[in-house]
Amino acid sequence: MKRLTLFALILTIGISAAFAQTKAELTFEKTTHDFGTFSENDPVVTYIFKFKNSGDAPLVIHQAMASCGCTVPEFTKEPIKPGAKGEIKVTYNGAGRFPGKFRKTITIHSNAENELVRLYIKGDMTPKDLDLKEAIEKTSEEVKKTGE
Image (cartoon, rainbow, N blue to C red; front, side, top):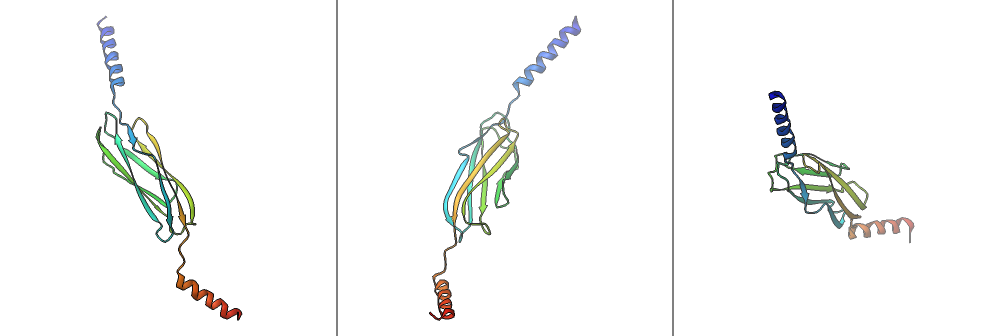
């Protein structure tokens, strides 16, 4: 009988401990950022996503992966205490890419209750501005070649 009572007590404590476990929770102020229109002359743009650990346990971000090599996320490797805030800096580098609209995904893996979160950046990179002097010289050369 004592063994049965001891077993029931241990089982009750184990179940209570399992339900009482606390979790971190990753809460972002916003999950999408639109860079709007920017020029290929200045193709590097950066945005900082701000978040809070809304849970009851320390938050650890294990990984932040971008959908493309042109996008680089940076994040802190240290645990974020409950109630504390953090940032994920995302840089898009459009150099060597075709101008136009883009949309990139950054996937965040953590120990939070919501262990997988996706962030999005988007924008429209316009073609390089032509140098007026260079354009006039090219036109002059073409006119000389054709004789017009």
